[in-house]
Image (cartoon, rainbow, N blue to C red; front, side):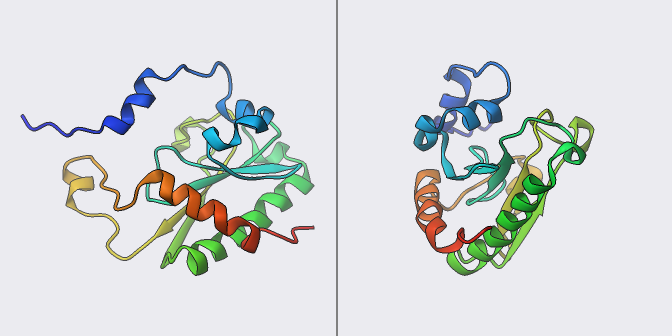
Length: 166
Protein backbone atom coordinates (compact mmCIF):
# COMPACT_ATOMS: atom_id res chain seq x y z
CA UNK A 1 0.00 0.00 0.00
CA UNK A 2 1.25 3.47 -0.88
CA UNK A 3 0.76 6.41 1.49
CA UNK A 4 0.38 10.06 0.59
CA UNK A 5 1.23 12.49 3.36
CA UNK A 6 -0.61 15.81 3.57
CA UNK A 7 0.31 17.39 6.92
CA UNK A 8 -1.46 20.65 6.03
CA UNK A 9 -4.77 18.74 6.20
CA UNK A 10 -4.27 17.97 9.90
CA UNK A 11 -5.96 21.28 10.70
CA UNK A 12 -9.10 19.98 8.98
CA UNK A 13 -9.19 16.93 11.22
CA UNK A 14 -8.15 18.54 14.52
CA UNK A 15 -9.60 22.06 14.24
CA UNK A 16 -12.49 23.01 16.47
CA UNK A 17 -15.67 22.67 14.45
CA UNK A 18 -17.96 25.67 13.98
CA UNK A 19 -21.50 24.97 15.15
CA UNK A 20 -24.17 25.96 12.67
CA UNK A 21 -23.56 27.45 9.25
CA UNK A 22 -19.87 28.12 8.60
CA UNK A 23 -20.74 30.85 6.09
CA UNK A 24 -22.96 32.66 8.60
CA UNK A 25 -20.15 32.42 11.13
CA UNK A 26 -17.71 34.04 8.69
CA UNK A 27 -20.30 36.66 7.76
CA UNK A 28 -20.84 37.65 11.40
CA UNK A 29 -17.16 37.70 12.40
CA UNK A 30 -15.26 40.22 10.24
CA UNK A 31 -12.62 40.41 12.96
CA UNK A 32 -11.57 36.91 11.85
CA UNK A 33 -11.33 37.75 8.13
CA UNK A 34 -7.61 37.01 7.88
CA UNK A 35 -7.83 33.58 9.48
CA UNK A 36 -11.04 32.80 7.56
CA UNK A 37 -9.32 33.82 4.30
CA UNK A 38 -11.90 36.46 3.41
CA UNK A 39 -10.86 38.34 0.29
CA UNK A 40 -13.59 40.98 0.25
CA UNK A 41 -16.80 41.96 2.00
CA UNK A 42 -19.52 44.56 1.55
CA UNK A 43 -23.05 45.01 2.85
CA UNK A 44 -24.49 42.25 0.62
CA UNK A 45 -21.78 39.60 0.17
CA UNK A 46 -18.31 38.42 0.97
CA UNK A 47 -15.70 36.52 -1.00
CA UNK A 48 -13.72 33.76 0.70
CA UNK A 49 -11.05 31.35 -0.45
CA UNK A 50 -12.08 27.72 -0.61
CA UNK A 51 -9.81 26.01 1.93
CA UNK A 52 -10.02 22.76 -0.04
CA UNK A 53 -9.99 24.08 -3.61
CA UNK A 54 -10.53 22.32 -6.91
CA UNK A 55 -7.67 24.45 -8.27
CA UNK A 56 -5.34 27.05 -6.77
CA UNK A 57 -7.22 30.35 -6.59
CA UNK A 58 -10.67 28.79 -6.13
CA UNK A 59 -12.89 31.08 -4.08
CA UNK A 60 -16.56 31.66 -3.43
CA UNK A 61 -18.95 34.61 -3.45
CA UNK A 62 -21.42 34.26 -0.58
CA UNK A 63 -24.38 36.40 0.41
CA UNK A 64 -24.63 37.42 4.07
CA UNK A 65 -28.30 36.39 3.91
CA UNK A 66 -28.71 32.75 4.92
CA UNK A 67 -30.77 30.76 2.43
CA UNK A 68 -30.49 27.56 0.45
CA UNK A 69 -32.56 28.96 -2.43
CA UNK A 70 -31.43 31.67 -4.84
CA UNK A 71 -35.08 32.45 -5.52
CA UNK A 72 -35.26 33.76 -1.92
CA UNK A 73 -32.45 36.27 -2.43
CA UNK A 74 -33.34 39.94 -2.65
CA UNK A 75 -32.75 41.29 -6.16
CA UNK A 76 -30.04 43.66 -4.87
CA UNK A 77 -28.11 40.73 -3.40
CA UNK A 78 -28.40 38.69 -6.61
CA UNK A 79 -27.21 41.66 -8.69
CA UNK A 80 -24.23 42.14 -6.35
CA UNK A 81 -23.29 38.46 -6.65
CA UNK A 82 -23.48 38.79 -10.45
CA UNK A 83 -21.35 41.92 -10.51
CA UNK A 84 -18.78 40.34 -8.23
CA UNK A 85 -18.71 37.26 -10.46
CA UNK A 86 -18.01 39.33 -13.58
CA UNK A 87 -15.24 41.29 -11.86
CA UNK A 88 -13.82 38.07 -10.39
CA UNK A 89 -13.62 36.40 -13.80
CA UNK A 90 -11.78 39.43 -15.15
CA UNK A 91 -9.42 39.34 -12.16
CA UNK A 92 -8.71 35.63 -12.59
CA UNK A 93 -7.93 36.05 -16.30
CA UNK A 94 -6.00 39.33 -16.26
CA UNK A 95 -4.45 39.35 -12.80
CA UNK A 96 -4.08 35.66 -11.95
CA UNK A 97 -3.26 34.38 -15.43
CA UNK A 98 -6.09 31.86 -15.71
CA UNK A 99 -6.80 30.70 -19.26
CA UNK A 100 -10.42 29.97 -18.37
CA UNK A 101 -12.75 30.17 -15.40
CA UNK A 102 -15.53 27.90 -14.15
CA UNK A 103 -18.31 29.65 -12.26
CA UNK A 104 -21.24 27.88 -10.73
CA UNK A 105 -23.56 26.96 -7.91
CA UNK A 106 -24.50 23.53 -6.63
CA UNK A 107 -27.99 24.11 -5.26
CA UNK A 108 -28.84 21.38 -2.79
CA UNK A 109 -26.96 18.31 -1.64
CA UNK A 110 -28.40 16.32 -4.55
CA UNK A 111 -26.65 18.78 -6.87
CA UNK A 112 -23.32 18.27 -5.12
CA UNK A 113 -23.33 21.16 -2.63
CA UNK A 114 -20.95 20.52 0.23
CA UNK A 115 -22.62 23.28 2.26
CA UNK A 116 -26.16 23.03 0.95
CA UNK A 117 -27.83 25.23 3.56
CA UNK A 118 -26.25 28.51 2.35
CA UNK A 119 -26.00 29.40 -1.34
CA UNK A 120 -22.58 30.32 -2.69
CA UNK A 121 -21.07 30.87 -6.12
CA UNK A 122 -17.78 29.15 -6.97
CA UNK A 123 -15.09 30.92 -9.00
CA UNK A 124 -12.52 28.37 -10.21
CA UNK A 125 -9.55 29.48 -12.36
CA UNK A 126 -8.51 26.95 -15.01
CA UNK A 127 -5.44 26.30 -17.15
CA UNK A 128 -4.71 23.94 -20.01
CA UNK A 129 -3.92 20.48 -18.65
CA UNK A 130 -4.62 21.49 -15.02
CA UNK A 131 -5.89 18.01 -14.26
CA UNK A 132 -3.94 14.81 -14.79
CA UNK A 133 -3.96 11.10 -14.14
CA UNK A 134 -3.51 11.36 -10.38
CA UNK A 135 -6.89 13.09 -10.05
CA UNK A 136 -8.60 10.42 -12.11
CA UNK A 137 -6.78 7.31 -10.95
CA UNK A 138 -5.44 8.25 -7.52
CA UNK A 139 -8.37 10.39 -6.42
CA UNK A 140 -5.83 13.01 -5.30
CA UNK A 141 -4.97 16.56 -6.28
CA UNK A 142 -1.55 18.09 -6.74
CA UNK A 143 -1.25 21.86 -6.37
CA UNK A 144 1.69 23.74 -7.79
CA UNK A 145 1.28 26.72 -5.47
CA UNK A 146 1.01 27.12 -1.70
CA UNK A 147 -2.45 28.17 -0.46
CA UNK A 148 -1.36 31.18 1.62
CA UNK A 149 0.65 32.63 -1.29
CA UNK A 150 -2.39 32.35 -3.56
CA UNK A 151 -4.62 33.98 -0.94
CA UNK A 152 -2.25 36.93 -0.54
CA UNK A 153 -1.89 37.38 -4.30
CA UNK A 154 -5.64 37.45 -4.90
CA UNK A 155 -6.29 39.65 -1.84
CA UNK A 156 -3.77 42.16 -3.19
CA UNK A 157 -5.60 42.24 -6.55
CA UNK A 158 -9.00 43.01 -5.01
CA UNK A 159 -8.64 46.83 -4.85
CA UNK A 160 -7.81 46.94 -8.58
CA UNK A 161 -10.58 44.66 -9.82
CA UNK A 162 -13.40 44.79 -7.28
CA UNK A 163 -14.54 48.39 -7.27
CA UNK A 164 -17.38 50.59 -8.53
CA UNK A 165 -20.05 47.95 -8.00
CA UNK A 166 -22.93 50.37 -7.41
